[in-house]
Amino acid sequence: MPAPKVYGNVQERRRPIGRTSPGGGGRGILNWEWRNLWGTWVNVLAILAGTAFGIIIGKYLPQRLQATVTQATGLGILLVGLSMAIQSRNIVLVIVSLAAGGITGEALDIEDHLTGLGRRLERLFTRGSSGQLTRAFVSASLLYCVGAMAVMGSLEAGLRGNYNILYAKALLDGILAVTMSTTQGWGVALAALPVLIYQGSLTLMAAWLQNYLTPAAVTEITATGGLLIIAISLGVLKIKELHIGNLLPSLFFAALLALWWH
Image 1 (cartoon, helix red, strand yellow):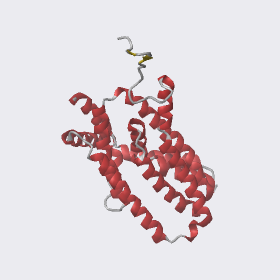
Image 2 (cartoon, rainbow, N blue to C red; image 1 turned 45 degrees about the horizontal axis):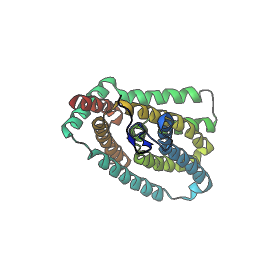
Image 3 (cartoon, one colour; image 1 turned 180 degrees about the horizontal axis):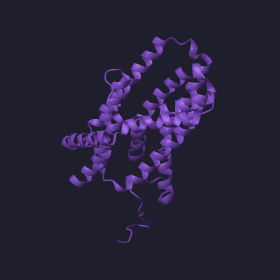
Image 4 (cartoon, one colour; image 1 turned 45 degrees about the vertical axis):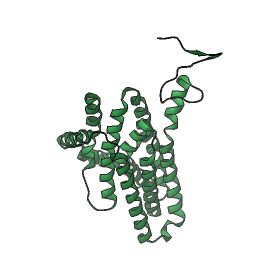
């Protein structure tokens, strides 16, 4: 390793690219990764605030207003997806990744397995319990955690430090918290803990993986994920429901093909 350059009396310090903080070194890497949890914290706060709002005055909000806000959020999600998708430097690679991911997802039946897992967990945790608190906690946790938006938002936060997906998800989750808490109470707020653990773990894992992915791979993962976010927006806007869970393997193929291509 070449010796550090010296400029006058100042010696150059080598620091990890893209992972530094004013403190530098390994501590800077750790701080950088933990800062990437900001989007998840916003999501958690949105759930807590939405629950409180729903319990206090949610029952006075007309359904039409809630529907309009949800539609506006859907348009915002569409914009986020478009801004991500257009970053691709190789459209063919993205298309091949989506096709390969869709074939793999359908073969593994990922979406049905996720749905089945959610139902089994709900039966497990609510078995023998008629408590509204438990049912609200389990139902809200599954709604917030089992979905492509939680995965894509966490990956985008970890890989690029971009929180837009998680911000949009936070808004959606907050609206859901308002509507659910009006009938199910404070149990909805408890779902913030699984969201913190699940999305936080995915974000930290993605931040660690960033060390092993080239910028080209991260770009194509982002573009492919952007198309999945567009698909989510179509569902929120009630235009078309797609099997997004079965398309999740396309993110893996995007990374693999980008590393091979470049």
